[in-house]
Length: 405
Image (cartoon, rainbow, N blue to C red; front, top):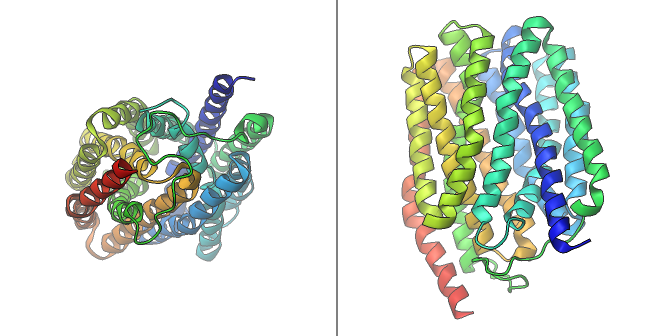
C-alpha cells in the first residue's frame, strides 16, 4: 500500500474515532454538571470534580504522548476508548462526592490518551506547510462531536434519564474501540517528517534544557494555562448559567451549546489555515482576547441570546488559539520527540483546565457567578504579556538555531 494511501486511511480512521469520542464528551458536558446539581452537589463541588478530571489529565497526557512515540497511535486510542466505556456508566450509580471524584480521576487518567497521538499524526498528515490546519482538523472533530453531544444529551434527559445519557456515552466509546482495532495496521505505522515543514528536522539533536526549543516550550505552556483556564470555565459552567441563573430548561441550553459548538469546527479549520499563513502568534493573541471577552459577556448575559453570543465568542477564541499553539510546539521540536512534547503541552493545557473550574467554583460559591467569571477573564488576559515577552523572543531564538543548522 502506498504511503499516500496509508496517510489517507489513517486520517479517515482518526477523524471518525475522534468524532465518536467527542460526541461522548459532549453528552457528558451537559449531563454531568446537571447530574451533580440533581443529586445535591453544589457548583463548587462540580468545579472540584471538573478540576480533578483535568488534574489527572495533567499526568496522563504526557504519559500517553510518550507511549505514542514508542508504540504508535493504536495503544493510546484503545486505552482512551476502553476507559470511557467502563467508567462513565458508573456515574449514574452514586451521588457520593468521593466516589464521583474517584470516577473523574480515573477518566482523566485514561480518556486523554488519544489526544497527543492524534495531534501529532494530523500535524504531519496533510502535507508541508499545513501543520496548524492539521491541528485544526483535530479540534474540528472534537468540536463537531461536542456540538452534537449536548443535543443528544438534552433529548435523553427529557425522555429518559441520566443513566441513559451515560450509557450512550459508553456505547460511543465501544464503537471507537472497535474501529481502532479494525484500523490498527494503519494507525501503528511510522510517521515521517513532511518535506518542506518549518520545524526542526527529524533526528535533530535534542537541545534540552536550557536549549532554545525548551525555552519556547515553557513560555508557550504558560500561555496555554491561561487560555485553557478560560475555555474550561465556559465549557463547565455554561449549563449552570443557563439553567440555574437564567432559569431556562435544559433543552434550549443544550441547543444553544450545540449550535455554537457546531460553528467551532469550520472556524477551527479556518483559523488553522490562517495560522499557517499569518503566523502562530497573532492567532494565539486573538484567542486570548476572545476567550476573555466571552467570559465577561457570560458574566453580564441577561438572556439566552446574550449567553449564546458569549458562548460563540468563547468558540472563536478556542478556534483561534488552540491550533496555533499546538502547531507552534510542532514547529519548534524535533519530530522524534513530538509525541511527548505535545503530551507535555497538553498537560499544561490540562493544568489550565484544572485551575479554571476550581477557581470559578470557589469564587462562585463565595461571591456569586458574575465576579467569578470576571476573575477568570482577568486570568486569561495574563497570557498576553507572557506571549509577547516570553514566547516571541524564544521562538526567534529557535528560528536562528534552525537557520544556522
